[in-house]
Length: 425
Image (cartoon, rainbow, N blue to C red; front, side):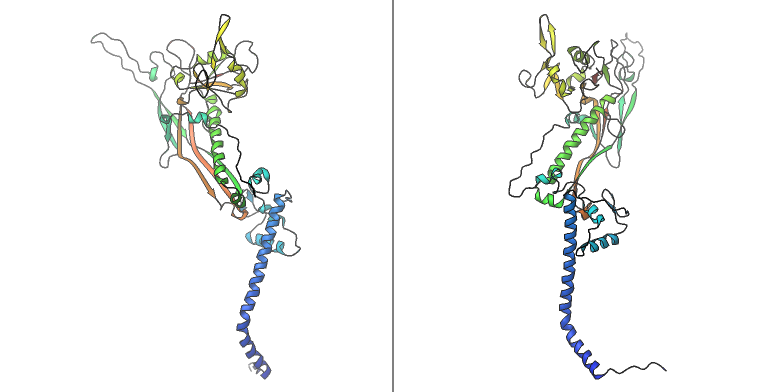
């Protein structure tokens, strides 16, 4: 037989009817209690994370967790999965609970934050007007001198470009322009045919990038912070471009003149003291510069050499004629001049006494390839959980000397080049 169903008693029937009548009235109150409980937990979670970030900002970073799995900016998180992270938040939110080490690790600011003065905290003010006092540097000096006619842009999906160039290493008869020659001839005499010789110059785009993080709070409290960081990136990239123009390796970066096969290095004078530059040195460098480059090239030097350069003169009897002309004054130019050409101190010049501490460089002897120009972007999504913003700058560029080697003159044996420097002393 099937189980018998018990008939509710009169009391049970009355209780059920009363519950059904009261329940709709209780639902709003119950829902309000649930909402209040959830809101309380959310407040506890926010407070816990705020405490963790405060401890890190104060330099109280404890040992990081040993776990791995979830990827984040800078490496894996200490949590194996997202549910582990949520569980750690809930446990740490309980009253009197210990703060999970993993939460402290991922809450640490990746880049700039208000809590650390050197990272930008000193920029945040309360009742004072703010004006950022920055150090101003001149960067991108040499790179900016590459003439527009020598700058090219990669098109479409290309990341490189080849240029035809004349293969000329000598100005002797039969070698100019790779082999073209003209002859004086008598009337009706035959002419010997000659032809030029060409080579390829290949430029492959290299990438240079800069990235900086700062917290959302710092962005809100520091007017124009992102714009200022972009300016810093531009200045830094300009510095690196000039440095590559001097000593770039030609592999992961453009080729600098110090590593170019076209470089001419002039010997120091016999018995010359270490770390010095004299009139004979600059005279001999000037003698190896081709006539064309004397119209477009510049002198670059380490600024520590300036007192020596300023004292250079051509001795005549018991007196002399100054070789160095200071900026303004006599020359009327923003830079000093040496043998009539601008002489500029640059940070990228080598230390005194090393190859490259003084050199004559012709930017017009360079060829450059770029694509897309300098791109700058800002994102709040890369480090969203950390409440950070990233400012990023990218530039794709390659450049190298168009000269493949020094050039042997038509008459004489000393080779010439648009890139001439002094040997180590």
